[in-house]
Length: 516
Image (tube, rainbow, N blue to C red; front, side, top):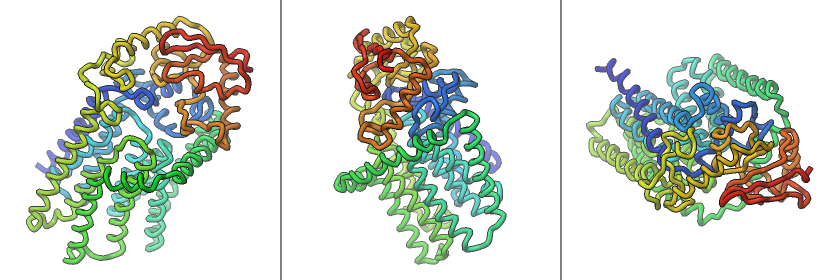
């Protein structure tokens, strides 16, 4: 039975994790988020490079990974979902093995890991920078536990890799987690001389740095472009958010939105205190530091979630915390029968609650108030969207009108042979019309998050970067698709030189030949 479960449980868990994300990820879209890495990944396969050809303030590794999926499996919505579904499966599997390593039985580890897979990626469905960043950071801490528990050198070599992926998915919260990791490693290597482990860890870090430098050199990416886009400009966003945080809003979110996370944390701490008091767990530096590590992981995650001002997505931490709590009492479950039952019921009830809200109601996609039955088949818009149930929040259950406008827009863009870029939140259109020139921005927002606006100290640098991309690609026409319009790029030019013609209700053509 043991050998059977060793093979069957991980297999079933991975299949379920991939399926659940694939299923719910195909219900509805929030275009600016849902297609964030679709056309950019497609464009990489046609010679466009992040940092060099378009402005990247987060997520370059998601672009690159997605481009590989498209390259080998074809450009399609199904391939797009395979990426995030695989990450969901990998996270569920590593959680399963982590809980088993803590001492939890296989079937109970399977139970908590299934709940984690339900709450992790299906809410958004598609590859997303915040999810990648926190998922791979936590996987990194799983690897850290395996490394310190087994002393196998291979874990020390692997350890930097998930944090590297996390950081180049999104700088935060990965940067916070990396600082936490370095604090732990400073204590770990200082307490005892572990030369071989340190060598394995350092060698891996060196290899990753060399690989990054090789990537930049091979693709002729200027170091200054890399530094400005990924390090300097994002710092201005972070400072602005921290300096302008509303304390009342912060505390309200902290208490109200994440009450079940902190309830789980309270149970975890209560169990630890009781077991320390009964001397069931040794009160030593190693145990205290390990448990403090997880407390810091929880608080960093919550802090980041509040500052992003995005839809909440970190509820998958609840079954992880409860699973760790269960593992802590696993050796004396007869003594804690009621608590074990309570942990199982609480994790199931909370998962059901957030599953209904985020997976079924599609709250992250802002579709909770819309009838998901009134969807259209995505393949009617684009051959690449087969399998997608098309419904968006902006057209208020009138997806038929949106679909007709998009079909009309795509047909028009296919016929025009102008040297053009297309500025849109529907970033599957380039792949559909097989257009090779990608916009100098991945996203166009007005809040100064995706690129520097005029009041940002890096605006002049960005302005030159943008215009040089247009000149290099000999762009004389810019098309915008609502809700984006001429205001999303006109500030680039110093003179009134843009000639605009409205093509249909959502598509506009902007002649910029006289702007250079």
